[in-house]
Length: 472
Ligand code: GDG
Image (cartoon, rainbow, N blue to C red; front, side):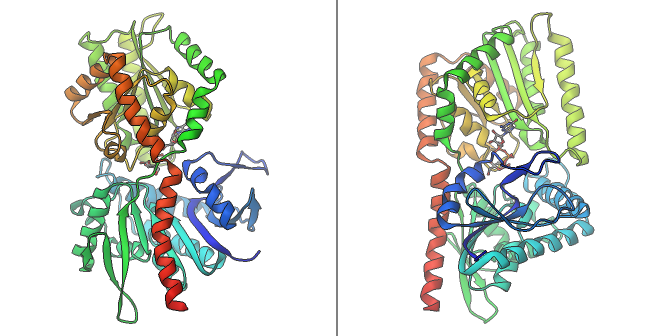
């Protein structure tokens, strides 16, 4: 295969293989949808892990994309992925909600695996290609790639928060990670505040100069180049949610869901990966107290919580699952009746159609994240409400709060405030629901995931053109 002019590098390939089947399916992610048109047009390549350990695969083509599998051993999965990425970086970057563990063997594995990704990307990229690296699992790849292939134009997008300097500085490898990221020409963040935190860490740790979004990075030949560190808030494929929400079978399913819950007056909904950043316990606590105070009754309010299984081999996640299930069991034990349940808890993953039916069935959507890069669920709920009904309670600690100001914004640590906000949402008159929902939907439709990738790639194109001018 000839080399590609556009290469995406992500921890995972955009395909899945069910169990021991040999057949690949496109995985249903936002990133995959966002990049599909770009990939097809550019005949791009995608470098990533196929999802199963110890499986060595040759590159292959799938629906117009050239896929370049990177092999991870079971040890790599344990140390690079579950260890450094998900037990060091994830908790540290989410404001140490859980304690990050700093283990040198994990770091060594992270360096080794990042190098493997960088080498695979360097091998797949044509002369002067554009390479777009995704997320916190691969923070060292931009620099490794630039060292190996100075001809490339390199972008990096960070899907999770970048923490304040006081927290970031805990990281024993803080300088190496910053240098790794600064290998990119454009470093994209979800929020303006994340880009600001990054620039501050660069100033404090590396003493590089920053001006507006530009960072002066010294190069090997004694000159400097400018890297751009800026917010590019990610979004969703809004149109596809609208289409699903308009389907009669999905609308009928929403009615059926309400019926199977006993047609309560109010359905409250939470949809999250089972993760300690999502504030699921805070949400359950607030709901439980509202039942206890008599402000809500189990006869007319049910909380549906979908908590899709996530990172089940990481100890913190096992503990979290136990805590949440204990809390759900307590509330239900105290408040369930024969005919009504307080919390319908579902530790399962559902097809997208079922998610949209749930969005349509829910009067109140609860997004109570303690820290979240963006939170796509908030945007999906809004997009699905083609009837302009429903109310969104949204944590100010989720990136989505910067754009979705017409939601009821809350601080999830303030349980009394959260309870009041839930009651405001439950009691919100239809006219106000409509007013707010229209404003929320306008924003999500006007800035969808295609705008996101276009904005990012346009910023990167400026560097690409400059590079072309220098080589010419
Ligand atoms: C990271 C950042 C940032 C969840 N359960 C099911 C299911 N989902 C889908 C949701 C949504 C996606 O997964 C989750 O995205 P979020 O943005 O809410 O959260 P993270 O997984 O933590 O994502 C986050 C994001 O990256 C993108 O940059 O926004 O801040 O943490 O699309 O709908 N989908 C289906 N069944 C489920 O059971 N089909």
